[in-house]
Amino acid sequence: MRVLRRGDGGPAVAEIHATLAALGLLPPVNGHAPVFDEAMEHAVRSFQQQRGLITDGMVGSTTYRALRDATYQLGARPLAFMVSAPVSGDDVLHLQEKLLELGYDAGRPNGVFGAQTESALRGFQRDYRLTVDGICGAETVRALRQLSPRARGGRPVLLREQERVRKAGPRLRGKRIVIDPGHGGHDRGASVTGIHEADLMYDLARLLEGRMVATGMEALLTRGPGQCPDEAARAHFANEEGADLFLSLHSDGNASPLAQGLATFHFGTVHGTSSTLGETLAGFIQRELAVRTRMLNCGTHPKTWDVLRLTRCPAVRVEVGYVTNAEDRARLSDPGFRDLVAEGIVVAVKRLYLLGENDQPTGTFTYEDVLRHELAKAE
Ligand SMILES: [Zn+2]
Image (cartoon, rainbow, N blue to C red; front, side):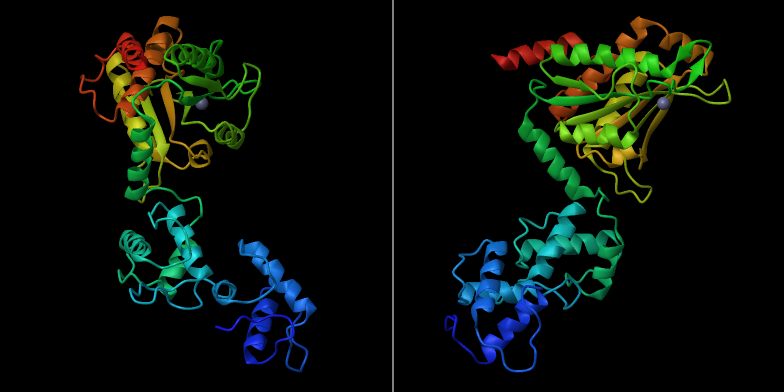
């Protein structure tokens, strides 16, 4: 196309003027045909700056394409993969970002509808029981809009997270874990006869911190003994610290003194989109602790609690026994038992980073094995 600049007029200039007006960079046309004047040149420069284009105030083919792309809003037209003439636009970019957010690998979001965008879209349509046609039409747009931007899960997420863990390597050294002792301060948690969940979990967190640090990991606690940040603050702390893992420690309480046992929770909804590394880690922790402590195994479960939902890294919450159960309480009150729990958790975390390469049976991989492995790899 001919490069348009200040002083030009005609239908092409009118079209560009209308686009800049629609983007809010120029006031709407007031009757007569617009000319490429100083105000329009200024608007073009602003647009170019926003988009990272060369800021020359003229409209050549690159700026023209970018202007046209900017006018497309998701849902305004159907989107599909066309091999000979790929569709581009801000609507495509928006679609790619949505798919990525939901865990579908649409590739780098570049605003061009390519083969990878199509396969990600088909995956989404399949999982959400829509017509699997690879076309982003009204039905798909509606489904995308209804989903919370924080929704996570799906196999692609698992694969990408696994890839990240594989790349991070099997060593614990240099990895950062945020340990979250539940409750604290005035909130004592489940309590019976002077024994409080908040204190037990703080002590467990310190034991775990010591063992984690000895392996070369960085360990951070979400609270001091007298503090009780809310759940969202604990999650944000982990995000701000760039945690690789988040581990929340609790003990349960129940009106029935018979309720007892060990359970582990990870992020997930009942719809089954919970296959994340959080789930994998929850499984390792639950198995190691069940075998080592011989507590009643109450299994792993998906939950949408804030500490699991708002953390960006794999996050797990363990409920180590019931303070309200005499048997569990006696064990929890024993520092040796808490140390056993800490050891089991370190081994479970190590197993996560080994990605199944270590086939030692659950409960037999010791803390000394972990340290030996760390030292051997350090050489
Ligand atoms: Zn609790």
